[in-house]
Amino acid sequence: MRQKGECNFILAKDTGSFNVNVPLLQVVEAKRNDVEIGITQCAAQMIGTRLYNEQRGLELSYIYGCVTTGDDWQFMKLANNELLIDTRKYYWGNVSQILGVFQGIIDFYNKELVR
Image 1 (spheres, rainbow, N blue to C red):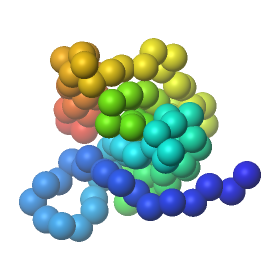
Image 2 (cartoon, helix red, strand yellow):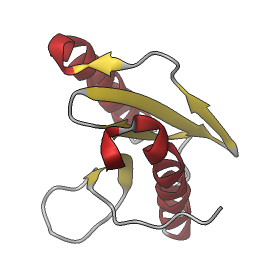
Image 3 (tube, helix red, strand yellow):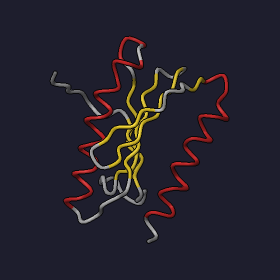
């Protein structure tokens, strides 16, 4: 099945310009309020992110992604050619958990990009 779609959000390392450089995390808005539908789109964007970074000489251990309806959030990690999907869904009613996952991703990249 071929997936296509536009990128909803990219979190990147450099915030000093409008050019996309060192994209780190893809966030996809789930279509029809169904997180499952967004998984393949996000996975494709994560692979694209990895390729984009590799073409610029930056090989990261992981690329992270997230699919959300705004209320439901599901996180993923691309490690080599394996897509790992967090089986737990996070809900806006417990925003501290969602922010905790984002903080963990940010902490990982802070260490990864310093090495």
